[in-house]
Length: 323
Image 1: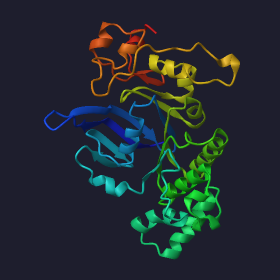
Image 2: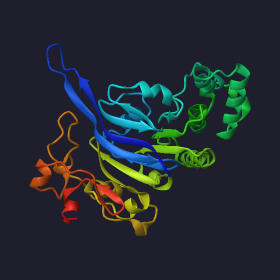
Image 3: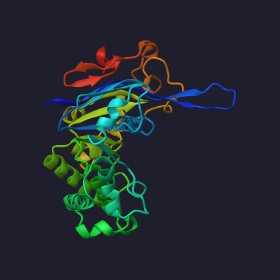
Image 4: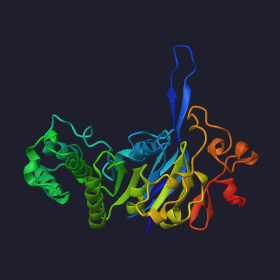
């Protein structure tokens, strides 16, 4: 398989103003993120709230331009300060947002919501747009008569199907799924995840799946990227990560995941301290204030992602054989 997404040292820093004369603070939402996504695979990006997952999703969908670094999507380069290539990729990358209740305009009928991207980006006639939208509704498990209804007439799962139909109407190659099932009931989650799997197989899609739920990620991902305080700390094939996580933060995340099989339940790893402020991250490894394996090197030097078998991990304790 060929690489369809390549990120090189992507960073996103937001300026937060504190007053009329005070110097703005820099909130480091994403810092030096590098990874690749292969055509047809599902890369899951996981981490606790505030780790930069959704910011990275907005960069990947070109909603925001990175402060630093380069992003290459389907052979087109998008670097900080040079977003000309983004216009050529609007139909290549689409996003499905977390909240199906807030993602749809309540004043528009479903047909208008789905056909709007076609109206803006194509020269199709009104009848052609309608035919394509009705076909897409059928593909996501809805009926053609839903075309003339309003979003409030649908359940949460049905609204997410409408959002998926809107994302797919331009025939994208890449779908960024930002917590697509976290706002849904568990029974509905399974149906939407099965739909996404069928669509990926049928349309040959590449997924970037943003989630904090590692039990969901286990069922959908091919590879997993773990983020902490804006930086990737571990990237691994799903099987390797769940069988033997390497980074201490990944170990703690997995230990907190509920297990349906009592025999698989391990000891819960409780991290000490609070998540550091993204305004003032600690020197060295950003995880060192909460890490039981941290030493003086961890407090002064930042580890880089290095290969350890099929896994890439940024941890001196792993590199030195201390864990």
